[in-house]
Figure 1 (tube, rainbow, N blue to C red):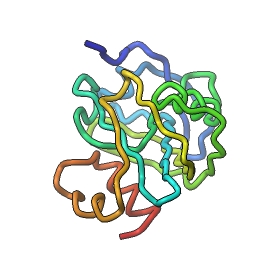
Figure 2: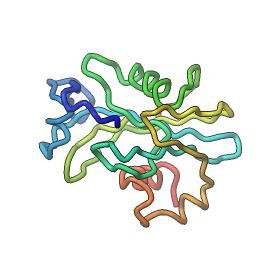
Figure 3: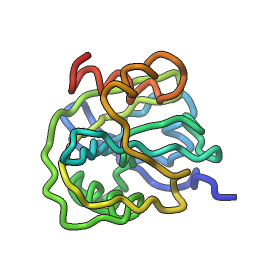
Figure 4: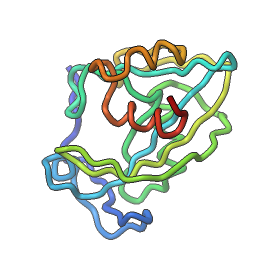
Length: 167
């Protein structure tokens, strides 16, 4: 079984994204609320369906829930754009996509605080989920809205989807 590396080093940032230090994954996810940057990619096909990944049961945050096509931490010393390209390649096996920045915001749960850098892309490239994920599939807008609030998605995905793409 896979598991997250609690010693992985993440940058600590202020709300503008400026690096102010570093901490381990374990420290960032232990309730300390140390602000660390992440990337999210919303991948739409040309029919308007949204690809979502299912988080594996071994993940330390929100296991077994459906989430953005790509979501990952920025490594210490890595730029946001580099992290996005790396995560897209690692999680869904795609390269050469023209991704568009949507929004940066702070997400806070009971265990962590993340500076989310949200992007989107429309493509007919077929994602090939890696073993970092428990698969994925395309969802229609109606399917997403119907499943909202039923424990199917991560809370962050639900909030982000409604904020970026409306009800």
